[in-house]
Every structure is written in structure tokens, then in C-alpha cells.
Length: 110
Image (cartoon, helix red, strand yellow):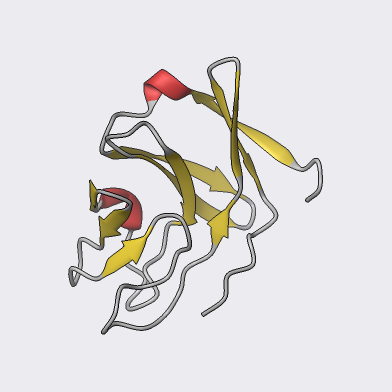
């Protein structure tokens, strides 16, 4: 993993069971916070019809796409069966209460 980290903002600024949108030159990335205070980053595009995942409902370690209710795993970006597909996921780190994402996509096994 490279040192290509982008500062997102304060951990506390991301609502529990919510998201924050980060605009990058390579497209929008949604940062999600679970009820357990875990942080995940996914491309803000559902693999089905490119719905804005940042506007979906977060529950457990999944988000529901607001367009057609596809469920996407926050940790991998993979659609929950029987749906198929994957959206890019990105490494996240928290340092002194500040959230950073790496713009280097994680590699996911489908």
C-alpha cells in the first residue's frame, strides 16, 4: 500500500449509521460509519445501476442502495447474494481522531 492518504476529516463528523461524501479526481467515495464505530470507504456507485450508496441506509456492515435496495458489504464492496457485482473499496485509517482514506483500491476476491 502506498502513502497516498487523503484526509477526510474528523471521525466524530461522520454520523453513526451514516456517511460522508468525498469528491476526488477519480470519482466520489462514500465514507461509512457503523453503529460499532467502524469506518469503511466505497466508491459511491452501486454495481447495479450506479445508485449513490452514500444516500443508502447503513445497518450492520452493509449499506442498502437507495435506488433498488441492493445490499452491499461495506468491508468488501461485494453485493449480497443473490445479487452479483462489486464496487471499489478503499483502505481507511484513523489517526488522532482524523479519518484518512487511501486512493489505492483494495483488491477484492469475487
